[in-house]
Image 1 (cartoon, rainbow over the protein chains, first blue to last red):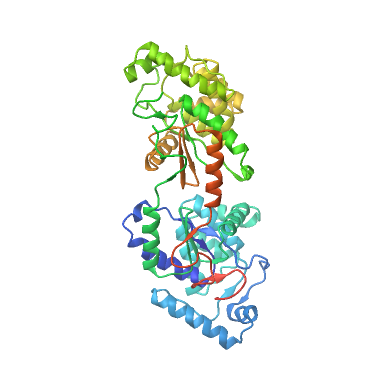
Image 2 (image 1 turned 45 degrees about the horizontal axis):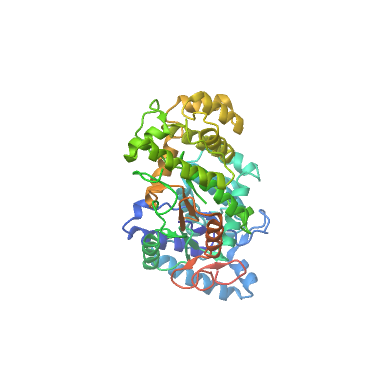
Length: 233
Length: 233
């Protein structure tokens, strides 16, 4: 499983829906979930932050009231999943550093914890995730070592390749938006779909785990091979 | 790509055929090949080595002459791929340590080199790959650090989990013999098939790389998602 994530609210909501769908899946304990990087606005400078509503209005050519209505629609969806969502006062900005820290967190086994904390900070608590002190506080709360976190933030190349590799893979897989869920590199689910859809996708992927044979049955004994229980060599 | 490998002669031959098939594949430079562990005889003690011909005769209930005929058949196949193959005087034994070293070599980027050297030593040069000094010499020739190699050999748990994880995965994938080739965890090729079959399998896997959508088109914009070029959030 590799959902591509972002500061996009549908990722925040989609993660909750996916987790509800996963909880209803019989083989949930055998599923490994890895979160991948995806930037919606990679060319924005790190210092260039600002209010979300104004960004939405300017990016999509809407009035502020229309942007507010878009946010209200998102909030309704968030609330229906039991998630807090503040429609005013949030910042937007460049998420590259968050993604780099999520890769460090992945290496240390706390990726999911950091992602949940970052989502909550950004969408429910209106703490800006675009300044280093907040990022450090969240990372330490997730279980990371403060010195290590500061070292990664101070070195712009730390985990930068890992972020870019995820984004290249997303492009190869045809993902041009998030959230985007990839199961076994075989099935794709786009968007913050209902939990039931994720359960169904997991079941479909589970059924489809058998390898497709090329050149005859994909089990040994049919060709020049050494069998584990004797025969052929 | 994840061929499962072993001291099985069909792996030695199959690797050559696969590489010939890969060389004829248009996107060969975009393919990553990883060799995985597979033991045919995991319960044999490390000290318990002996001549291959007698093992074959006793394991499969054949006479020594019949075992010789089996080996001659294998040799013909090896020669047709331009590989040397000595049918007499080879040892068999427990390959666990070789697999552990191949995992170290993978971490150091020289897995393919060590595998080729180990195959040549075992099948063409009749150097026993079941003693530590030969293994160290081969590993150093492949580019590994002697101290590191000796440390791995001295610690029976070093890379042991990696070997077992490969074998569990092979079992999950339904591989009960080797060589066994897995492409994108989607397609399986069993046995030392002709090079053309591998090219065809690679082409089929390449075509099949597109994700199968679940719950509508597997591209964003069709559901609750944030698109990279605007829209929805």
